[in-house]
Image (cartoon, rainbow, N blue to C red; front, side, top):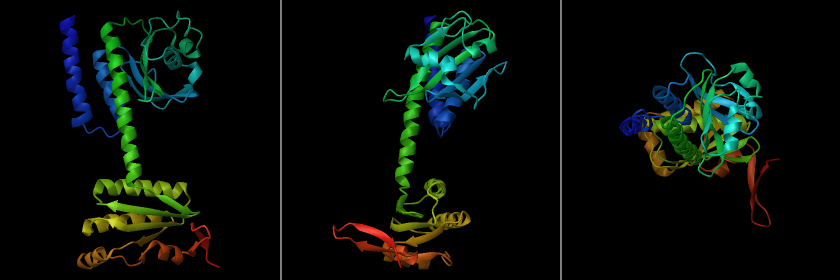
Amino acid sequence: MLRIMKGWKYILSIHLTSVLKNKSVRNFEEATENILHFMSKLININTLFVAKNDKQINEIKKAVNKNAVLLEAGSTLPFHETFCKVSVDKGNEILLIEDIMENEQTKHLNVTADLGGGSFIAIPIYYEDGENYGTICGLDTESFEFTEQHIELFQTMSSLLTYVLELDKANKEIKDLSVPIVPLTKGVAILPIIGHINEYRADIIIQSTLESSTNLELEYMIIDLSGVSRINNKVSEYLLNIVKLLKLIGVTPILTGFRPDLAMKTLEIDVDFNGIMITNNLESALFEIGFILNKTENKHLRSQPVV
């Protein structure tokens, strides 16, 4: 048995290295799907799934079914009517239920009646600060004999998913910092672009800019280029793509902050900025759309419409 356990751990470490590095997993949901498929090779239970809950609704984020389709991704139930709640209430210990029809905590649930019997295993998934994300679970309509190997598998995957959650969270925070869209007044926001723009970052900027423009109901987006480290044909192409997409959703883009060196560089490259509003600074950009900056008596700046 010891030899089997050591072999399993070795296979697990090799596979997870592949999942997290070689496969270029982009987010938590992709990692979850890979992990569930891997687990299905190690435990012969019908259904494995990860559920997320907000204490009100329990949503199946990813599910892998071997034979009968017991659960599908996207399905939801009230949290208090689920096996997942029993697991979350138990805390960070593994929950093992060999017969859901006999267990005092599950036999009265509607989901138990729907399944008609079976076994369940689960353990919560937490963020590093202790907040619960949801659960990673195994479910079968047949009686299932759980082993120490199965328990360790679920405990390991719960810890791994906590790690992936934090990576995903950090990645989203980095994206937000790299695209700091600042609302100035109703219908107007500024996007200061700092550093170098590559294809990956351009995609992030485009996605965040379009989402913010819609959510903030923007009429104008002022794109400040004073922090751009360099400009070339590729960077200009990215900027023009952002401008075109903003126009398509009804937002007027304004380019501002061209430093002298950037302005000279645009003369050397093949780029057409015709039809795009360009100003030399933020104040000029605001003036062009009918706003001025006035100093109040307490020295704060505010914007008001030109009358």
